[in-house]
Image (cartoon, rainbow, N blue to C red; front, side, top):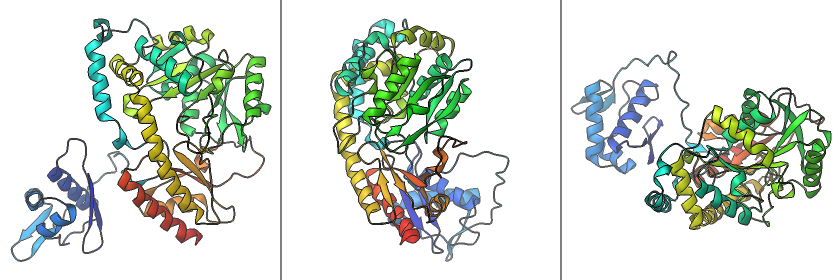
Length: 470
């Protein structure tokens, strides 16, 4: 539950309950933080309990109890006839303590979905069925590091049907998500002097992972046709690409580029890593089949349940060429071992009973509505344009070269409590793969906010853009 109210001095306070936290505790914490941080100044008068209770939708007893507790702790003063005011409390010295970054009021950054959309009841039913029928061995250490056979069989069927992947259970390895998949592949394929060609622009965290795993990222240029493999050097051992919906530009890999990439992999006896992070979410076009089907012996297909379900499940998968199965399992055995089994059993049941398909359709419909609202809002500004709108969970808003800097837009939004992501952070540091100047843009995600919060976030974005672009 998130509630907000403004003091007489115009100070906005937000009551955002943490998991397992009661309403009174949440109000107490919000007031303490505001007083410690100086947003509520000493001597400032707080609303009457009746007024604040009405604004927050709480009972008057809850607000009275919170006030009483903070009076007892010395944060507030209560005098008969004068109401409740803020006491003089020295601001906390926080320079010795690293606190987590405050959660923004509105979040349109890409990468996550609406966690309120998680199919709790469907998942509980799958958990009950899976655990009831699970063999005793499922509760012990894994016999097969590839993962539970039930999930690998379900994925082989689902991926072949929904994404056109050429998969057999024997070549599927279950991981704790795409991050682990990429690290394992970087250690196996990039050890020694091997370089990993990674899209430019692309997600910087993935470059960090590859570098930390011992491989060297190499900038693979992306243009309006997608990743361009023509300039790949001879010492590249693998190419990491997002062909269905390139991140962050949103472009789909052109058929000619798909063929060229496969021809390169075959001639160089190298590997293409296909990150199909949001290929299931398409809106205005027919689905683009997985690149892996064109060359199963040279393409690793990597997927995850994070976008359709939730990142907290920590479930991902790889469909490997036969020659990579044993090396990946050897690396897995010496690093993080297997992924937990009970979640695998539940996901296998969810897929087998078509609950996963239903969830995909529900999320797709919700995101299409959000996408339409976002694209319509951007269309009102002639100086701006939208790209990558036909699929995924984000769009790229291109900013004019002669307008405000990308950082100015992000800072203006941050002052209004809106978190945005810019294109600049996605370029490789050297930017050597591009002769032209770097484009400016915003990578706007529409998956994270709640249903009610999305419109508020969009309204703030529109206000910021109107302020800067008229």
